[in-house]
Length: 423
Ligand code: SF4
Image (cartoon, protein in one colour):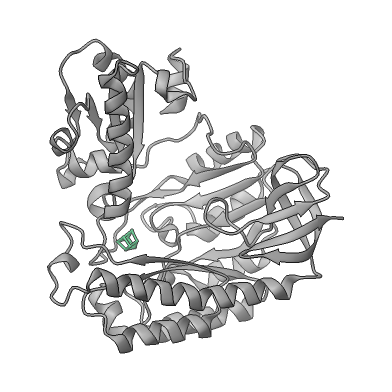
């Protein structure tokens, strides 16, 4: 959207309070994300009432999920855009500016989703110039009982390999050294394409592109991780030894109720295989606590598993009862207070693990990608830290610039972060 807006000659400002049009790209797959989006929308609608902003347009997942309902949720929105209307953003901005009526550009029917993944070439990056997200697929064919994403983003479809490679080359020539591969389910990449060799084949081709030093895989569905993929990651030169594998839970009854296709035994075996095949692998996962019917014993099993698995990084959500999902209709919904307690307990267990794993790194040498540098001190990440969600390295005696890869030595820890020195 940004690139199209800029190409059309419209001026993009980083001071939204003085813009003619504010386009809010929303998230809306669970209640807290929706609340955050609504708060931002309300802020700009109020600015509009005071005359500081002329029009407010809502784009992204919340717009797709709620469509016209958003007009009654927050009065004063001028336009709502569906996900498949992304490439009409300039036309919609111009129409909105010249109209006094609010309009919805959302088709919420299941068949409304396009069969292809939009072409993301020609981008205007809002991440720091040296790293970028690279979307390789769209939608999801799983039907986890708690999840609204397939209804928002449609069925799984891969972006054709040549498009992914073209986009990666473009990013590389713009100076991007870290590509973070994303999609709702990256491990399924290529299964719907006639030609191409799935995710492993894509990684091998991406490795040939000059420029990027790190290629990172996010959001791998556990049962989609093949032996070939493990070998490709283990033997790759640029694919970093970091895997983000959301498992959601570990108790077999809960996994079944969640409609996940893995069992506890399969997940355990996968983690053992990964640790054996890629000894320096960093593993990240995501879990849900307080799923309907989750008993104290099932939750305790999850905590025990976290201790056993020794994840390097872990994100945990309280279960959200989302309209339109089958889990929302399940009996034995867990009270909010219990969910909160379970989340705290789990995160405390993980904190001990993360701190201990960090301490073991003291004295070792790590290659760091500098994200920002101030006088003498920088912030960066080693391969085991993904941007925006993981801990960071605080770089002392840093003489490098953002985007440079430097040698560092770990000299200490600060909570979840590592203290390193440039060497
Ligand atoms: S795999 Fe992920 S995106 Fe797909 S339905 Fe399950 S939780 Fe949602």
